[in-house]
Amino acid sequence: MKEITKIAVDAMGGDNAPAEIIKGCVAAVNEREDIFVFLVGNEGRISAELAKYRYRRDQVAIVPASEEITCEEAPVAAIRKKKDSSMVVALNLVKNGEADAFVSAGSSGAVLAGGLFLVGRIRGVERAPLAPLIPTAKGVSLLVDCGANVDARPSHLVQFAKMGSIYMESVLGIEKPKVAIVNIGMEEEKGNALVKETYPLLKQCGDINFVGSIEARDIPNGDVDVIVSEAFVGNVILKLMEGLSSVLIREIKKGMMATTKSKIGAMLSKPALKQTLKSFDSTEHGGAPLLGLKGLVVKIHGNAKWKETRNALIQCVQFKEQDVNARIEERVQAAADEKEDEAETREK
Image (cartoon, rainbow, N blue to C red):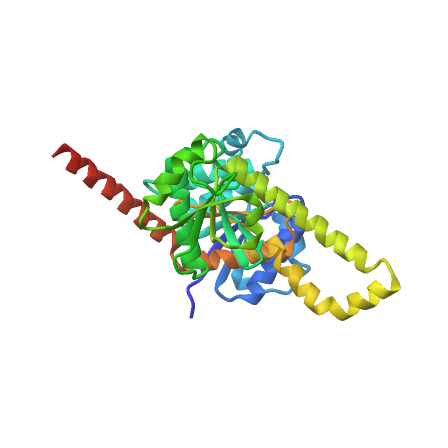
């Protein structure tokens, strides 16, 4: 029998909580026998939602929490003050080793703050980046960072590249994933001060497959596997891609329903079109893990529906099965040891 992955879910976080969050959790446990879910939040509301479904009861437990953290609250203050909030209680389950992973559609700032202060970074990790999988013409690419570190330094971006490579190797099975840094041109001398300083550092990394710069317009082609940027640029890229994808899907559907002929064509092309549109749906790929923490913390969209929630839980299983955290810790420690050896050599 497969090892069980225990996941603490913030049942009260997000625009559609708790209904869609719980629906996604039920779908996950009914699909997989290797998932156990702690639904954390208002016991009465969670019980009422669960009563609507048939599910494997031995794979779900309710953990009461009397408070909720909203997006209007200051993230750090909320994490510190609301000790009995669904988010803090769930994160503490990961911190204390009772759960392997945490999933929330709640406040992004609070998830980041809670992940850092409660779960904590792996020793040697300078910053923990958010790393979502984004759909491309060739499958998916990992965008790292998309919102956690808006004032990153070159050494942070180098670690992002290494952690992103480990994730793509381990979870998606991509051998020697191609790594590129977001830039305004392909030439090495282009870019702002951060990119210019980071580029040669990435070139020197023997443990990643660095292929140079990538311009934003080339990202959807899927020619690289790991896309490195600081959080401000990464978040703009992510939001633009999500918004553009949503508009295109809506306009395509509207155009296909415009005339009788287009409706007939839509009926004939529906199976192929449905599959194509599905491949560009970001919710199909789960949430954004906060890489480099001692436990797995996954942020899903604030308006996440049941399908994204289910996929995020399955993503947690893959993360645990491949022991991604241990691989990141090993790589980070190896880099630290190498720096120490170089420093000793210079001293001699």
